[in-house]
Amino acid sequence: MILALAGRARRKKRQAVRCPAWDTRKDAISFLAFTERELAMSLFEFLMVLLSLIVGLGIAEVLTGTARTIRWRQGVQLYWVHSVLVVTVFIALVQQWWEIWGLRNTPEWTFPGLLMMLGGPAGLYLIAHLIFPEPMEGADFREFYYGPMRPIWWIAFATVIIASTFRPLVVGTVLLGLDNLVSLIGVIAFAVLALSRNPKVHGVLMPLVLLAILFDVFFFTYVIA
Image 1 (tube, rainbow, N blue to C red):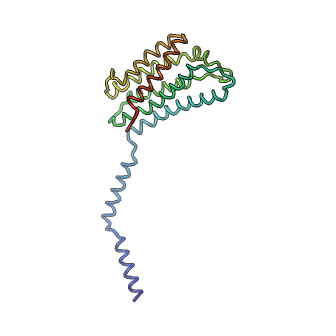
Image 2 (image 1 turned 135 degrees about the horizontal axis):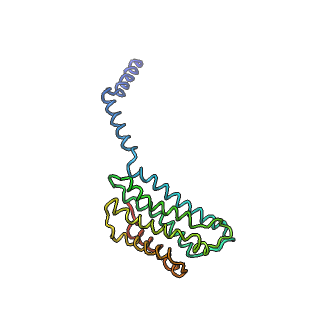
């Protein structure tokens, strides 16, 4: 009697587990289609890989140069305007990555549009690579700032122009909008910095550029969602 009851229970269990073949295939196909949609890389994610790589390399340059400056701190002569520049480049790199989130819903991209999008991060990477003297030991940052480092101002000038015209030309936003006010300040400031070696001019404009970038971050892109 006990054996018969046990056999009957096993048969019921097998019947409960068994599913019709057609339903099983249907469920499997639905599951695979759902998984494919979930795992597929979106267009925005595809483009962000390259942009994030360039931004990451630029940040690495700034952090490496800062670390080397700290290591050789006893043998270098720092210059406060140069230090403001380092902070400005770091924040600008992070801002480039942060602001690109606003383009996540752009339905399509062209190759020239991609090149323009990469213009800002690429220019900032070049600047980040060039703002620290080589070799570091015994370096005079003030002399370096007004000497070998000067080409970065023209790079910055071109970078701001590309970054400020990228969205109007590629996405269709307004060129003379309020959020592009900082870019206009940057274009004028970097042109003056490129043409002037006056320490007072640099001492005023470099902090102004940093404050303009911070203003742009806190008033236009402080929160993303």
